Structure formats: C-alpha cells, structure tokens
Image (cartoon, rainbow, N blue to C red; front, side, top):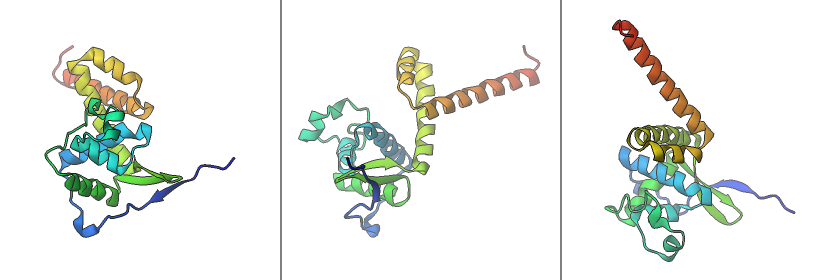
Length: 170
C-alpha cells in the first residue's frame, strides 16, 4: 500500500497585482471559516463559495447554509472574496496543501495562532451569553484552544484578585 503524499502547492491563477488585502474583520472571518471547513478538507473555491453564500449543488449537499460563516461576505463578489483569500495565502496566513489530486486549504502556524485567539474570544463571549451552549461547544474544541482559554481565564482571575488586594477588598 502506498503512502499518502502531502505537499504544499501554490494556488493557480494567483496574480500578485490582483491580490486584495482584507480588512481585519474580513481576515478574521476568512480564518474562522477556513477552520470550519478543515475537518472535511475543503478547498479554496469551497471556502469562497461558503463566504459568498452560494447555492451551488456542493453547498446544498454539504448543508453549508448551517455554517455560521455561510454568506458572511455576501456583500462582496466571488472574485473579490477569492482575491482576499489569495492575499491570506500569499502572505502566510493560509496554505494550500494537496493530497493526491485534491487541494485543500489549511492554516499556517501564523494563521493557527490567530485562530486560537479568535476561538478564545468567541468562547468567552459564549460563556457570558449562553453558558449551556458554551458547555456543548467546548467538548469538541481543539485541546490547544482549551488550554489557551484556561490561561486567559486564569490571567483574568489573578488580575481581579490583585485589583481587590490593591483596593483593600476581600
């Protein structure tokens, strides 16, 4: 049985002059949407269609409309979204890898660090607003994100305790 080969690929059709830098909010949306499609090895085109809110057969078949990122950038054209995704690829936030003939999109280490903090902020917000939903969501979260969340909570508790001590409160 042959080994599967993974290799990095350069996206075809990327012209450096046509790249478009996303806003910080757009970058965060693209990174988190990428995180949502990594489990089933989605590609760059699938990501673009997800963000646009496409109603293509593959999107319907994969129940893409249930994703919280479905149509998040629907105010942009497919071409504009693709240029922003390509900018993130060229600038080291995302990467295209290939298993046999199928390319799929993944985070680079730089992108993954950013996604971990985005997840922590999302989980902290969820914990405040919907504790039950938080408890369900935290079960399926990557262990690295869980550890970072605990570190952030610990820092917040220690900061609160230090402030109380400075103010003479108990």
